[in-house]
Image 1 (cartoon, rainbow, N blue to C red):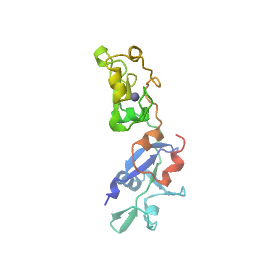
Image 2: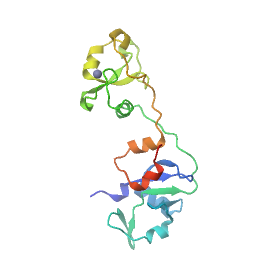
Image 3: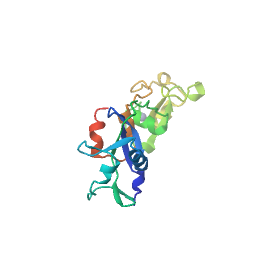
Image 4: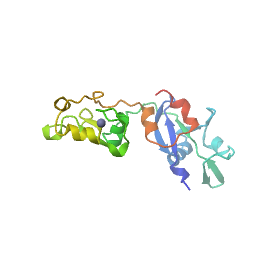
Amino acid sequence: MRDCLTLPVLLLNRYLAPVSLITARRAMVLLYCDAGHALDEGGELYDFDSWRALPIRDNDDVVPVIDGKLRVPRVLHLLRYDRSPNVVIRLTRRNLMLRDHYQCQYCVRRPGVRELNIDHVVPRSRGGTDTWENLVISCRSCNLKKGRRTPVEAGMQLLRQPRKPRWSTTAHILMSTQDQYEEWEPFLKAG
Ligand SMILES: [Zn+2]
């Protein structure tokens, strides 16, 4: 069984803009300290005492508390935090795959993750760097065909110019978790 204290809770700043995902454990602490209020699917706000008074429904995730059980909130609204986060997008294989839509940037095919490589547009042996602008996803056969050449030398064309992605907080949040709750939807739309 999954530990309900590790479930993701969507954190909103005081303007109801998404900030990040936190664990249910952290959300409980913030709720208990009155740093934030829990939001239900109807948009109602609850402080700790009123949240604790809510009945447990069949589909609720719950955590045990001294005198019973507590619903795990899906959304926590921070009362005083007014900033928006700067999303830091790390240069990783997974993020490159996401940026390039799991698609070979030379032949446009999508052969599946196992058949995809990371290609240095300007090869490392020619001074090419590990940067968003010099790394693209390519399939094995394009990778082999290109060898230690630049795309121009190899007569291959890039689908698009590689850039650092500009993902919104929303996109970043959605990509970082497998979970999705209907309570999140009003706050994660069209980010
Ligand atoms: Zn290819």
